[in-house]
Image (cartoon, rainbow, N blue to C red; front, side, top):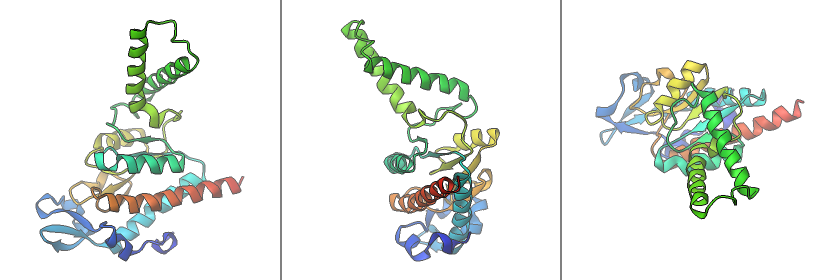
Amino acid sequence: MAKEDFKLSAEEMESAGVNFGHKVSKLHPKMKQYVSGIKNNVQIFDLEKTAVEFAKALSFISKIVSEGKSIIFVGTKIQLRALVQTAAEECGVPYVTERWLGGTFTNFETIQKRVNYFKDLERKRGDRELEKYTKKERLDFDREIAILKTKFEGVRDMSKLPDAVIIFGLDKDLTCAKEAKRKGIKIISIVDTNVNPDIVDYPIPANDDAISSVRYILEKVKDAIISSKQIGKDSK
């Protein structure tokens, strides 16, 4: 599928600030291919190239989702957390927006045990099974549940390793990408001008710091997932 199929517009991307990279001094040599120039000492993305790469990523996302395969959103940059979480919930996919927990992919069984413990504690509290403990002990359980919720809420229903991961900020979540690579999980990621894109299977050359830029990308990803889920249902 081409950029036209996903209604990718260079004008809209520019309005969203997708085209702004980092300062010239932070350019990773392997990102030169996606840069068209410099403005006020800042690298500027070639948005035609961004549109081509973004269309490839969206095509892949559409394909795996329509096949019933699973995907997870990862975005732990502080300014992006709420955006990524909301989009993931609207798409009905797992997400990680707090600190990436080492081993989430490579030590999945151990992580699953912690998730199950968290869900069991929540169930016990809901069923009033914790009432037999002292007030102090119940407060301790409440604190533990709150901590576990922060860590695991986004992956509570992820019963197996995903087929793909979408990373919204490769520099912040490089550990996630390395784990995905080790486990054969396909990687889609925004790649800004300061990162090495080689680890990514489907790079989206774009600004990964500005909320407006990431929102534009998330909306396109969300549309691709939701429409592909419907196609998957209709084909059954």
